[in-house]
Length: 283
Image 1 (cartoon, rainbow, N blue to C red):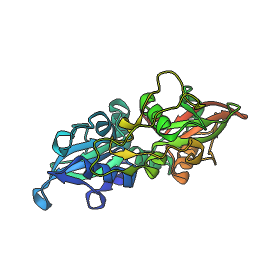
Image 2: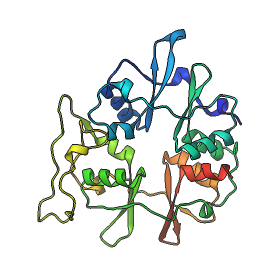
Image 3: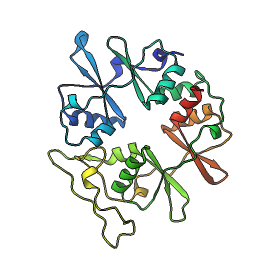
Image 4: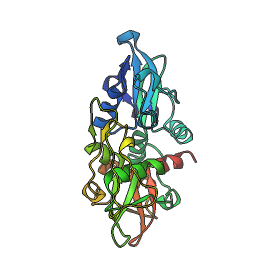
């Protein structure tokens, strides 16, 4: 199976154009819950692909408003490249979306596209997920205010957190798209204000002073201050260690998720992320 068989073609892509502002990219990322957006200049036969603007760049450079200065170079591929080869590129470059470029932007192939190929048997999926899963699990308490949980996800460098209840048991999963879905863009504000823990707040700990000026994904976005339990997915899909990569891929595609907790009996022992399935294709 080649990239051409799995990619989203150019005519189905939404892009942002130069010249433009950070808000153009922010609006797209919030609506689609993607990690990056392709940037082009010109139209029709004169269109040129310039790169991607990522959510992480918007977080790290909150004072930059010009879209041209937020564009990043990254790996590209061609439509004739095999699924296995582009999966290896995604793993090596830590890229969730790879533009398909042959003189101009032909499309985009994503981690989800490769996972779908595994689910449909178009790419190898017979490895057991117990061999692929990460045994390091990012977690957050169900009573944590959502802005604090967002910062925890950002600092941990992963797009999810397993949510734990008062007994330390898994009760849900919180993801970046869950946060994006309830974030509100604040127009024309230099910052969104502070969310400061009071001395009597149960969730307050040393080092947490204010998180309002680093809201997700940029400082001109407000996040509700209610606890994580109100926004998490409580109906958690999990998988056992002997399930195959193909079975995990099918569960991800069916439930529109990017990670599945790995369990042994009732015990949480790891997390299978979509990129773990790609690592299996990379040998």
